[in-house]
Structures are given as C-alpha cells and as structure tokens.
Length: 438
Image (cartoon, rainbow, N blue to C red; front, side, top):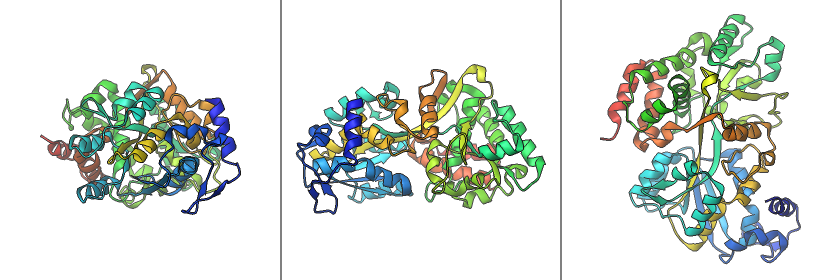
C-alpha cells in the first residue's frame, strides 16, 4: 500500500506525456505512474457518466481524485452533481436517460432500483475488490436479495457538533462530555447575552429539504433508547410513532424548536444546510450539529482544527458508560450499464488506490479499512476515521437512508419540515407511519 501511495503522490506532480482530445492529459499506459491502473486499461476513448448528490467543492475534488486514472486508461469520467438527485435519478431512469453510474446516498433508494431490475449486478472484479477493502456491514448495504450491486464510495460521521475553539476559550466554555452537559452549556449561552445563539440550524436542501432534521432525530434515538430500538424503528418492527420515538422527537424539539436557543425556528426551513453553520465561524452561534462533510462548507482559508477557527466535538451520549453511539452515512456506486468501461470505473472506485487518491485531497472520510488513518491529513477527517474504527463506537447507518425511499427520502423529510413549522411530534410521526408502504 505504501508503495502505491508513493507512486500516486509522485504521479500527481509528474510531467505530462501528451495532450488528449478532451483538453486533459494522456499518459503512457506502460509508464511507472500508470502501473496501478493496468487492470483497468483497454478502454481508451470511451466515456462513463456518473450522477450523484455531490456538488461544489466536493465534486471538484472527485474530479481531481480520478484524473490520473483517466489519463492512464483513456476513460473519460463525466460526473454531474445535483441537489435534486433523489428525485431526478428516478426521472432519468424512467425516461431512458439513466447515467452509467449513480452514487446512491441511500441504501433504501438503491434497493428500490435493484428490486425493480434497473441496476446491473456488480462485476466479479468489483465484488472481489470491495471484499478486500470493506467490512461485511458496509458490503451488506450494497447487497440486495443476495446479489452485490454497489461498493461504498465515501463515508461520513454524522454525530458531530461544530464550534469555535476561540469562542469557547474566550468564554471559558468546556466541550460537553454528556448530553446533559451540552444542554447546560446551551442554557448558559442563552442566558449570557452578547448576541450569541446557543445553536444554529439549516434545513433547506432543494428537493432534499428536511434531511438535517431527520439526522437530529436519529442521533437522539440512538442515545435515548440504544441500537436495538433504533434498528427496530428503522426496519419498521415497531411503529414509526412508537411512544419512545415521540419522546425523542420532543427532546430534539427542545433544542431546535426552542426560541431561546435558535431564535425563530421557522428560519431554519429557508436556511440552506450549507449556510446553516457559518455563524459559528463568526462567533455568533455556539454550536451547529452537522456531519464531518460540513468541513467543505467553511469559507476558503478557514482553519479546521482544535486550535483553529472551527472544529467539531463528538455529539455526546446520554450515558457514556453504555458506549459511544455513532450515526454514519455514505454513498454507494451502482451501475445502470454493464459496458466494460463502466465496470472498470466501478471496480476502480471500490479500490484502496482510489481511496488513497481522494483522501490526500482532504475533507473526506472512507470506511475503506486499507487506508491508514495517517493518510487523512485534515484533523476532522482523522477524528472521523478514529471514531469509525473505535471499538467503543456503536455504529449505525443513517436511518432515513435505509428506509423505503418513499419514506426516508419522502414523507420523513417533508413531515419534519411541517414539524419545525409548528406541527406537534405525535401528529408528525403518525403521518409518517401512515405513509409506510403496506
């Protein structure tokens, strides 16, 4: 692995052999820097389209991460990120305009497409590569009815609270170690004046508006009731509106619907998730609960570190003695086409070579067990990987992403917005329960 990483690091600064027709660079496929891509060659001049919800800076880094692969294989990967991915991937598929590859952030949505016969089973090469690099739990999320369709792409830890180390130092605030300590800190900030809000929240995300609120509920259920109840709820073995779930939603409401903590909660609905936490950097907001990938949303020049402009602490457990509940998520690379060049790209994206390339660009986390922690340069990335690998972590995948798409990427998102706008917890959860496919 170290030898491959060294070759790839050298290749990123190596000389260009010649220009390609699409304005990129082509390299001698027999050169030393192209040796890691030998298994993927033989498809020069082809194009593979990829479609995902990954946009902006993260999308640019994807393009950089597979640039050397493109130069050494001659395969042109055309990636499109779309904030309306969950709805539009269905529209494109139904209209006969499906992408070659789709990066599904919801295993539940992936399962729907696989069950409908829309996806191609992964090649033997992709499956073999994925089995070398990922745990059984992660592989199972890309498996439907015993058939393997998709390996993980990126991963993220959702159980984080972003804050300003400088502000905490100025105010002598300690990073909370338990949920109760976090509420006590919230009360202290709320009563302290100075124009600082305890919490800032952004729920708008185009067609996916509402998903940050579902993350809040899932994290709190894990902390209130543990992984077994969480699993039963996600799998609909208990009703969506079980009294324990109602109680957890009320607890979430005590924070993000609390005027003393957030001002007018209805502003959250029109504040984009990208902008939701920015007041933290300006020291106008003390805390913002959001995933590790939020590191990409801070303005250029922001130092993300324990001694930096912003950093994140673990969203604390109610009872740390019972373990460390962790909510995680990620994308899975599934194929609508099985042309040889598509299979080559899908296999490459399951490899440790690609994960190493993407990790070196920063602001990204992988569940790939063959990528060492030290490869991740950003402090928040390292912290995320350490949490994922911590034996005390009680890891669960994002619940809404595992649910049937019509619920997890549909009524759950929509009803949480109605809830923020004033609907009570019991009625909100009852409406989602009524929408569960019979």
